[in-house]
Image (cartoon, rainbow, N blue to C red; front, side, top):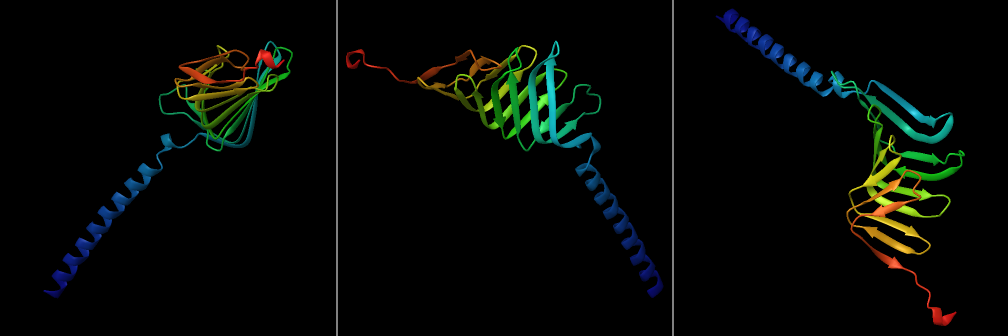
Length: 190
């Protein structure tokens, strides 16, 4: 009798262990599914974009991860430790610098997105843009946002409640739902 109870107990323990192990392995595999892992990872990333052998953009980041989902030819790059992007004019002179704490770039679509403390400065004019989300369309040389945006220049501070649209060198821009404070000189004082 003792032997049957002992054997039955062993069978129950073995089955319970097998089921528990199976669940643990499945759980671990679900946590580390290959499709959720980057196919490439790099540190101190730097890349250059040019057109007709003229430097247009330098893209820098402390860390980059490249993702390519199963059946997805496009994939994307993710920059979880921030980015710095430098834009150059047709004479390869630095015009603008964009920084953000997070970014993502879809290479096939040539579309970038920056989030979290996004700042863009036009080096030539001194204008500065602040927003929490910004998109960059490399093919159209266009940057834009649909969220609150603040632009500061020598004349004052301007707000775009619905975002903005600008060329990538931040020379010409249009605020959406704009308001602001403008410095005006009183002509009688002159």
